[in-house]
Length: 93
Image (tube, rainbow, N blue to C red; front, top):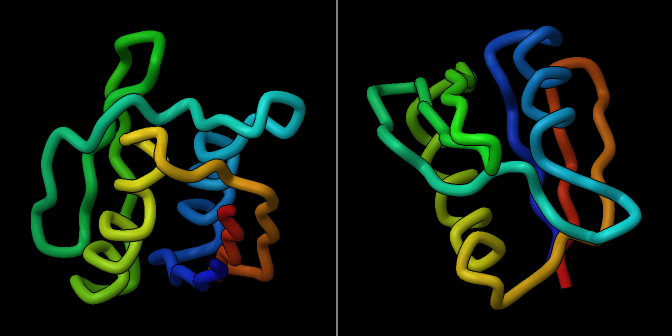
């Protein structure tokens, strides 16, 4: 399954991409979603730190939350990510 998520800008996309995917282990640094406020998502990482990601709009933040939940529940793995400016393409299996 593949999806495209639009972040607020290129910096936010780059930040999110660096937190999403560990290539060798096909895992994510994200441990859980702490909060969603409009177009902003606050996530907790496996090292217990919290980070904020800004998406283009509320639709994209909800789309990402729905997509990433099965990965956090260990039902799927991320296979690849790709960034084109402020758009991140994520593929899971």
